[in-house]
Image (cartoon, rainbow, N blue to C red; front, side, top):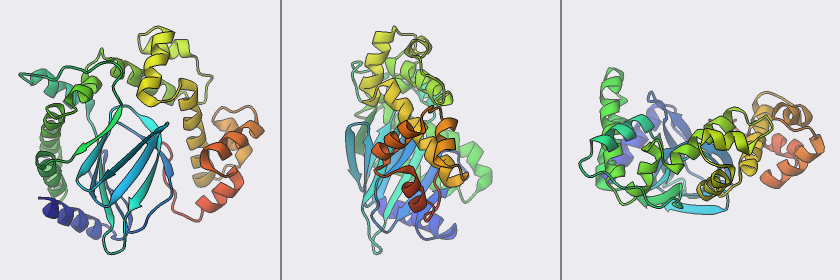
Length: 302
């Protein structure tokens, strides 16, 4: 099965430009990636998703949590978070091949409601990111999803059905007690996710924990506690990463200078922005952007 999957992935990517890079598909939230070289950590916003390594290996850092996953393993993300990702195992002879499939919360909830023995949510302190084996059932689903891309008329009919299968295997798997929290409307995970949605849409504004807590239907102290458990960051630290990622995108793709980008994302002090930017990206804005412009632009907030 893994050989068939690898062949299908390479076939699709070769037919759509070939080489290394990120390959979009006709299915929203379904991306393929190939890299024949190792990479330095790159920042991005990761939505709730199933991130699969078919060959090679990657490493992701969410806050102070580090996750390594390799061939035939899947990293599952249950709340939207900024992270740094890098390719840790790849070569020209055997490139790293990966899949990113965003989860559909509506379908997850529908499947959960129809299960005879649905998983019960684990304690409130569970992780929002974890690694598990990419078993044969999920491999079969992903292979069929890739094959639908050859018949565009089939996608709107078959894609939802395959996503239901994927949701079932995830919910009935070893981490179903964590994944179900994303689908349960009153779980702390889902409540924090709603606050994160509000924060992301207004990251340039002054963040008020009371407003975010109200969106999550929690007290400020309870919200702060659960937010940090799930993301390893405080709301202010989370907002700072969103601001810096968007400022970087503005400078790389839209030609903003550092001062204008800083003000655009909510900073009142250009010097504070430069200090925090260098702390996050390892180099001052001007030098970093000069290096970034020599490479293909990638969206900071996807």
